[in-house]
Length: 136
Length: 252
Image (cartoon, rainbow over all chains, first blue to last red):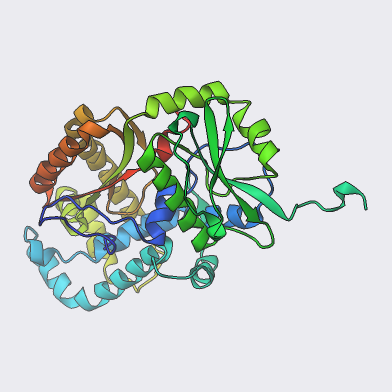
């Protein structure tokens, strides 16, 4: 689900991404490298904003909810190894759990920033969510 | 007109990275706004920089891509210390006076350490359904909470959900510590240095920058291929690179 810009080489199991998309570049370079003293740097507001935007993570309660959603949308039936009451529960709830799955994927996509999005649209979707800078 | 009236000058020197001056070969790179990249030398080091108009708020996609392309090209030619994206100095003089001169000796040392090395970014992620399934099956409390919360409407904020998420998160942390150790044991023989990178999400296992000597690259890739095949039912491995040593520019 997070490998849309990835291709496998020669049928192998190790994924070797072609680092061409914006998302890959942001992930690789943002916040990395030699830091030039702020007192000698020309102040550049736009860049600081972009840095913060790309590092957003959801606050801790939301993170737990994300884990919970992921756990609840599991379809354990396919993987076996559970008791009968759960099987019944799964059959009744599979419709609802799929919806949750879609929502979680949507959040993920927004965080990663679709690689072909332009800045204005992804910026808009980000600004509507709660955010917190990540501990380095 | 008083000189300090205008706070931001019209153009600046955008800096991509610091390289050894001995490289010699002239650059024919284009940077941000297609501006030619020049080397600003000072004794044994030089900064790769280009003139940039400061008439708009920077930080756009084209600028990120240009920065990345220039640093990659420098890395392909020899050691480079990437400078953090968005670093603009006032003038060519300032590049020498404020960037190169104060840290000249440190840059020389860092560049010597990076000679003949490239960075790879290794990411390991869980096959989410598989690992979360293992956790639910191994932990009766999580299984019970899951039974209780599956009927809750989408987006509900229920204490049981938070509790379950917390337990799952903790169980994942334990699994991660174990699995990450296995993975790093398999690659450590091929890397000079390693640095953790931020990562998150339910499927996150490991994000690591690896500093690898040119002659070990193929071995590293082979070792990871074998590992990826052995683990593929639970874990996916992804190796990006070779890259410029973004995560090792401040080390040492």
